[in-house]
Image (cartoon, rainbow over all chains, first blue to last red; front, top):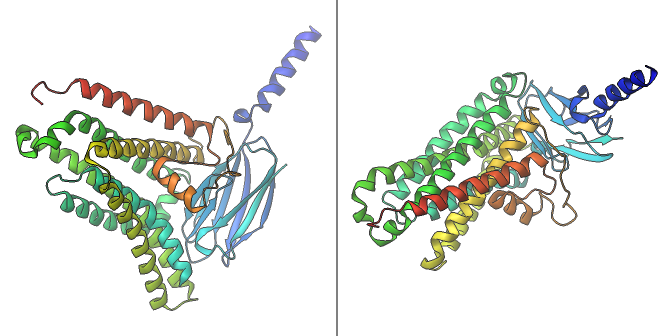
Length: 110
Length: 272
């Protein structure tokens, strides 16, 4: 009986450890004055993340990251939803293509 | 001003290369220039429309409307390219011999030209809408005069168009014997590349699992923002860090279209 309980717990734990079955985690960013705030966000590795990027500027921006393999135009005043990961531990820079000199940031998976 | 040039060039380049390939693949076909120009014109109108609706598009379908739209555009382009290549496998010999002999095939040839014009339109809509948004965001940014922004953008557009024309001109130097294989081979890779992008946008919207993210990492060898990386990305779908699902879509599209082309070849009517 005890063994069955242990097995059940192990199975449930395993189920949650499979990336696809883990609950998505939300991470919010804003774009203000052609900059990302915060410039660096920390996320757990091995888990799917939902990035919510709100553009507070009057101009559109394009969120882009070669490392994350993502690109998305964000209209003025709009919030973009971008799914990323599950990521291996590491630093994944992103930038705003329309204002590349100022709009820079990174996702740090750990 | 230079900033505008670089970004407009980058956006225009992808569409220009696709137009170059389409123009080469339809060389010598009647009304080719008119079809391509009509495709570009419809694309410009479409991109202005899409750019003005970006906000509405983004909030649609729980914030992934843009991805759904991109997936629709890419999926349609893949189908058109696949259809063209399969059609060409069946008709290439007849076309090469004498276009006038086609007779009954004129209607089907026109259908193929409209499919290719649609590919041009879709490519222009995809890249043009981003270019329009970028130019607009520069204008309201107010750091540069409108004349400087406009000239910078025009220069980027001209450079991008020149690259597309360069690719086309390069194709024309390929000996006739190899010409069909070269163009249909490149169209095949282009379709597979778009199928991989189709998967990427759906993964970004969480509508497809990534399978592995990434499956491999060759950014030490060639990054996707190096000039050669950009070129290979457009022409054959090179990605330094692709998701596993993208590779599945790429390989599946490649296999299905190649199989369709082989099959169509065996169906060639005995008279041709």
